[in-house]
Image (tube, rainbow, N blue to C red; front, side):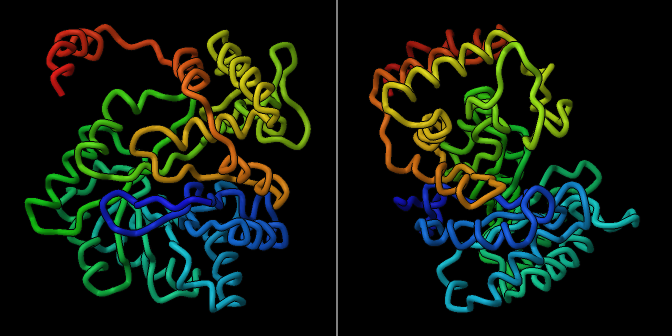
Length: 344
């Protein structure tokens, strides 16, 4: 895999990262170990997790599995960019969640212990915390960076104003500035292009998209006339989160799925590789996060690194997946600045 800079850090990451939310749930430990080996063997170096993974089952299991994998391969640690997150509730205590100084430092210590490492390369706020001033959150992250326990900080699931305020506050106070954003981003969900992508471009943050295949929708596994069943994410729970079948079973979705399939047929590859290649080539994207249940599934998706979309194919996919832009403020303001943008 090719390597790219993570924002303005000077750190090189593989163009596809490994997401490990499945570890300990859809992927038992034996399968997770094989996935990790396959990812590194394929040239990958960015492994992402969170203290609350997996969503169902004992929290911290994903980190523990990665820690055991690392402990058996000490020579691999220095070549890995290890990323995790804090913010979600870890137990029944009201203070075991959020982005307070107290919890961030405790959460980091817990992640270090589970990951069996002395530092985290990228430590991320999993979501905005309205109960904690961002100044306190950034101060706590800065303490961890200065102590050497964390190398860089990032955020996930922030809105545009939250991200810009975080970056500007960190710069104003002389704290460590976030270097990455981890949002949902795929052909079915492009709304981050209205505000978040411009902020990332302006401020030099790398984007690490989660859900690059729209939780399986862009892999071609679902059909118009039959609800999913069997051992798939939606087969096990058709009403699951943002990817719920009834929620996405609309004509726009099938138009995009069909267009991806057409390009895949032209290239002679599975649809998933087309969707991943399209996303990896978007502005400011550093590395889409690939989730997998098996090593074979991961290897197949990693082959997206070997294909290239023509300008005509990319333009086709851009057009069919473009979200309907709200008249205000986005459409009106875009039209009002169109002439000035031509000067750039």
